[in-house]
Image (cartoon, rainbow, N blue to C red; front, side, top):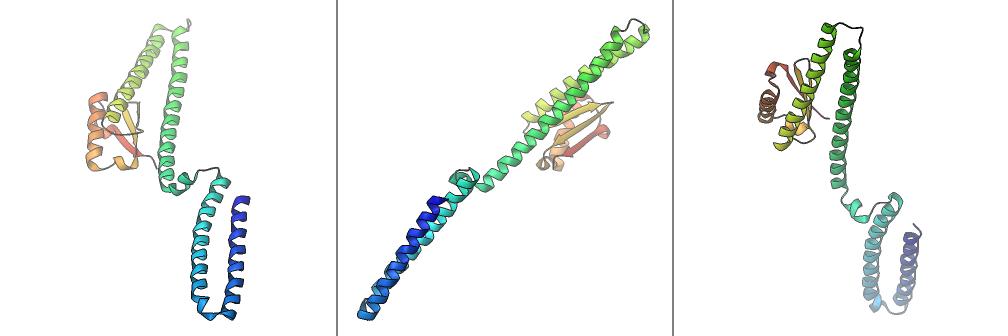
Length: 200
């Protein structure tokens, strides 16, 4: 900030001196006025360019960003949006795994409980197997969707239904049909039970 102020003071002082010289010259010799005017015009143009440079430097110093980052602000915003989507997807997947881990722990308690009947234990085992199968189908579907160009996709399977979360650009009719085809092949879930949502 001090660097910018110092440069501005130098420019202002230079302009003041030039105005004084022009005043003297115009009083003493009017023929030289045009030359002095050209000099002032050049100095003003240089001062204007310097002010733009200083403002960029000042913003960079105050925000802790580089001048290149400031000049490429649009690109930075786009990168930030992509990063936000990736973070959102990571959080959704983490939450999904935490819920599934809690459910598995509860089922394991049932299986290990000696006071429960064999039928109850078998039901818990079947549910545990279903959770594991669902998890595998989700991973398989997400992997294939990513391979087909769908970024930051989340697939969630529960009770014979499949929820798919994709980016806003992935909801054209053609892409929707492609998503549904992949889900059907990897999960055996029909169109009626596939719900495709987008990240805002």
